[in-house]
Length: 248
View 1 (cartoon, helix red, strand yellow):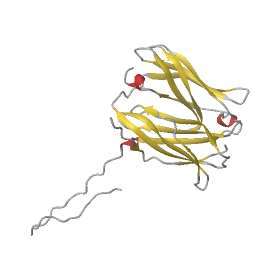
View 2 (view 1 turned 60 degrees about the vertical axis):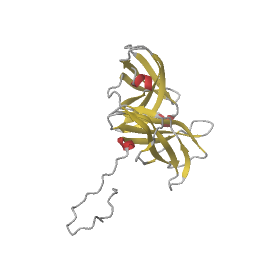
View 3 (view 1 turned 120 degrees about the vertical axis):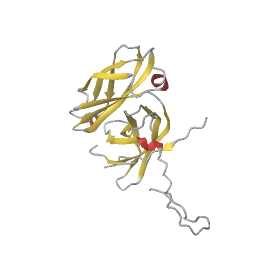
C-alpha cells in the first residue's frame, strides 16, 4: 500500500526568551458566432495536512545540562479535521537570529484525535554552539487521516506541578480510561502554562493500564530553565497508538 505524505502549510518562528489561489485557463472555444457563456475557475484542492493548526511553539535552552548545548522544543497543535491524524511530524529547525540554519531534527511523530490537541516534544536538541536568541522554525507533515473516534479513551485529573530542591520539577496526575482490555506503554505528553503561555513540558510512559482502572503518572523535568516558579494550567496530551485508538 502506498502512503501519501502531505506537507502542512504550517510554519513559524519563535524567539528564545532567556533561555492562491490558482486556476483558470484560456477562453478559446469552438468556432461560433454565439457569445460564450461565462466560465468559473476550477476549485483549488485543499491540502489535507492544513487541518493541523499550530497553536503555540516554544524553544528552551538548558544551560545546566552537561555534555552539550541542549535545547528542548515544543510545538502544540490541534487537529481540526473529523478524522484521526496519523503520524504528525515533519522538521524542526533551530536558526540564528539572522535566519541561518544551525540544526534540524525530525521529531517523534504523534497521533491526534479529531478536534483534539497534541504536543510535539523534542528533547535534548544538541547544538554545536550556544545560539543567543535562537529561533525555532517548524514545518509539519501528516502521513494519513483515518476515520476514528472523536472522544479519547483516556482522561486526566488531579494534575499538579511541583519543584524540587535540586532545581528540577515534575508534573503529576491521575489517568482514567475506558479501555476494554489491558494496555501497555501509554505515552503521555504534558505542558505547563503560565498566563496563557507554554513554559515547560515533557513526556512519560505508563507501563501498564488496566481496563477502567485509574493509574497515576509523573513526568520529571530537569533543568532550572525548564522549571518556572509557577504554573497556572496543565495540559496532558496522550500520544495513542493504533491499538489504543482503533481497538480500545
